[in-house]
Length: 345
Image (cartoon, rainbow, N blue to C red; front, side, top):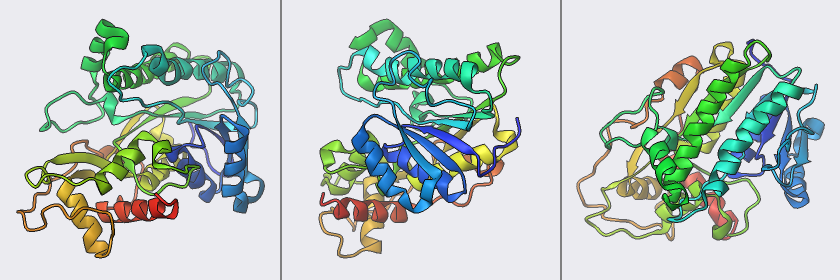
């Protein structure tokens, strides 16, 4: 399908979340108009105020319960040229009801696709935000590509149901959602005027701009990063692997690029800026801000360890989407810390 260019209208689901708010901003900065779905009037008012400088190019649309069949029917209309599906849940608790994960993460995706089939007359591209959890499951030395799938999680979720670990259920829900998109577009290719692109980011970290007034209310990835930044580690653990990362702002730019690039239709793209240890993170903060209070120093005199590269290969996304160099760990961490402080965390 042809690329979708500004000033087209893009529907972004989950617009009030950590990543959703940045994705909305990226599309607005690129000249698009955005209709963003939220779950309450308060969230709509917050986003309307956050994006007021874009005049009338942003509109918040309230969908209180996205789990209901046809929930998106009222927001997909002839005005919309593209749909970016960000909304979903992430629960990594040891015990989570399977329906609480699969409902919003898998079933609602299929329901949205049905809505696009019925009402997406002028939609040209559907972009889905998946997760690296949909690829993982191999030894740490494995380098993941777009061909990898977390089939182990799917098998365990099928076997154990709600007795499976929350992270397993989340990973399985993302695998099944992606495969549902592939199956749906293949089955209805003679009926639809749109193609589908899947973006697969690793943990997204960075500054927050969404409505959040406490650490407890942070989304999962931002909360994990906050814990990374504020938790002392035993000296023999500081050089342990901590995580992969992609700055949320770079991820948002990739969504825009995926809409503006004709060849992105039907493709899967990994986003990963690199891997880091806890000590890498502490050093990145203190080298940029020697007075960073509350951030552990770890063991600065210990031998330094850095990973040779990301464990999830983002070469395809960088090349095909013509992405600029991803932000480094220091910029990502410093800006995240600054935003946390501004909220009084």
